[in-house]
Length: 129
Ligand code: AMP
Image 1 (cartoon, rainbow, N blue to C red):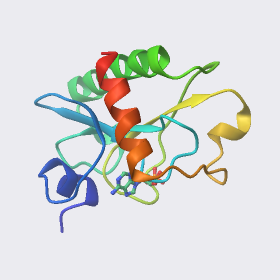
Image 2 (tube, protein in one colour):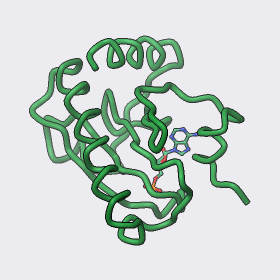
Image 3 (cartoon, rainbow, N blue to C red):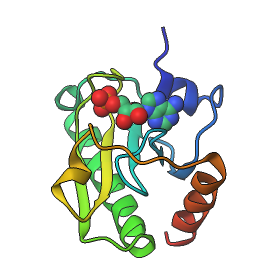
């Protein structure tokens, strides 16, 4: 069965898109740790990061770096934290999280944003690419 991220990639499920090329997509996490929490996802559905081919792995990091730069230009923060987990969605994704504090990297710490706020934020980040 297709992962929820494959369904997003195929346009079956909506997302607040940040960036996309032929191999990767980035969109806002639906349940963010902090404002601007973004997921960078390869379009090929592979479960685990270190099972990606070497080129795909390096290109995912390069893509994530470009997204992180746009996040830094948009959201005042100390830095962009990066995490890879995958226990909930078995489709590789890099979490990029604008952080000011260690608690922003805790997946027990969540903020609430409504859909309009998420849409406006995604538009602001896209403008900063
Ligand atoms: P994990 O697999 O543990 O790295 O966590 C999966 C992440 O995907 C969580 O932070 C979820 O909030 C996020 N997530 C799950 N479904 C969606 C969705 N439809 N759109 C955006 N983010 C999602």
